[in-house]
Length: 222
Length: 84
Image 1 (tube, each protein chain N blue to C red):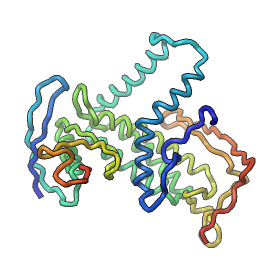
Image 2 (cartoon, rainbow over the protein chains, first blue to last red):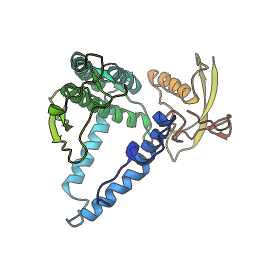
Image 3 (cartoon, rainbow over the protein chains, first blue to last red):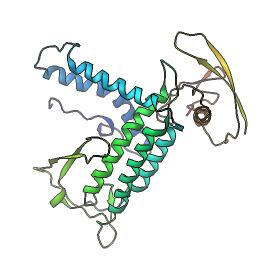
Image 4 (spheres, rainbow over the protein chains, first blue to last red):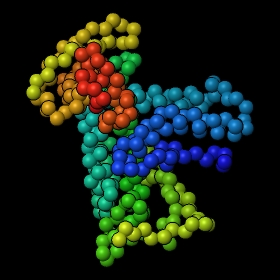
């Protein structure tokens, strides 16, 4: 057992068969996301906690609460004309078309520009209506606000990965017979993108992948 | 098609609730029950009215979040079928 190493979501054990895609894979994502991850990670972190208990009066608590409250207030105060679902669908369409299984430099650059325009419109003309205690429209608006940021970062990641890797096909990088052309020499790393604010270039963090025992090889179904 | 719904609504958790009547026009027979509620909410929001609340998540019959009572039956009239 390696302390702190967990496999959750799609990576945990399951039978992979005809109903894998969207069926038992989704069940794992839901169950692990709802129930398993919230217990495993804190359980590990609890043993790692070297500092003493932190008082809830610590300024970090007040700052986090203030940030959350001001974001919720901001979304409700826009009082525009367009429902959250419209923005969700528009963003989904951009990502489906331009950051899907097949993507190109041209399409990804357009997608980033379109997402930025959509975000501007979101914060200018969003309409959130809901009750004082239960308000799933407000919750949804918060998630779409996050999705606007994550979606843009996904496009940055896809744009900088100048190879066809896994199920992600960059149209510029293919073999003469139309197969995915991977570039292990230049792209043996994982990326983590740090959001730095709307309209700003995100910060790119890289972690190199070192293969000691099993080295990458060509996967061919031909 | 046209669907008439009576939906239980409460202003807040503590306030008294009541059934509200909604007539929804142009419902497609291919819509799921939740998609029909989405259509209703879209129209309510565009009219400036508070949308109805309902739980949902995966929308493909897996996760079990959409716990809606329809005509007194959990998840609706079809056996072994989720509301979504």
